[in-house]
Length: 279
Image 1 (spheres, rainbow, N blue to C red):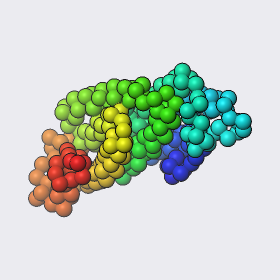
Image 2 (tube, rainbow, N blue to C red):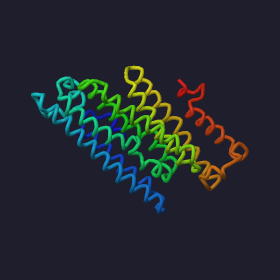
Image 3 (cartoon, rainbow, N blue to C red):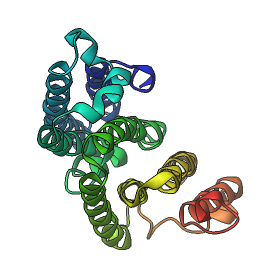
């Protein structure tokens, strides 16, 4: 995951995203139960296919940049691509962004490529669920933002903004419906991750410096709150032996410290003041 954040090489960045899938899949299926193994396989298959679309987009961007640079081998570096973005073929870059959005949007958990996320997050151990939601989703989102910056300079912001708004609003709407009907605490938190990634996509789709700032701020705050909630759900599972919200009750009496922290995380995620997500 650190390589995704620090790499300036487009192919290394893609390979690092794929490596996060392969390495974290073992953590999802670590219990060896049928449900956890099924979730791990679904995670591997859907994300690998999705990230393959991201590779197609990466190759299209590389080929386009290599055709306008005197040193084609430099076209693999994101900083060099950004410098040449105004010279790129708009049609090819438009197609590349569609592939990139589908590919890395799958890893980010955007609708309709989110099908792996509720199962993987709910079946993984709670600390792993926190890692997946707070860090791994953001790694894919960072790659998406890097390509978004390039595409906006190459073809303007109208097309990528519209796509991000559509995917973002669909993610929020679908996830909100499933949140209302969930009784499994970890699946509820997983759908909340889909919703919040949708909100980040909407903020990016609105565009401008304030839109990008809002997206990054929300990403940071969501990571902190979701880590707290997933770790708290692990304590609930250990104490009650179930994730069923119909069974879990009286937390303030049974486990007051966890209840207070869990309540604070829930209020933060709901955007209540004075928590930062409210802003």
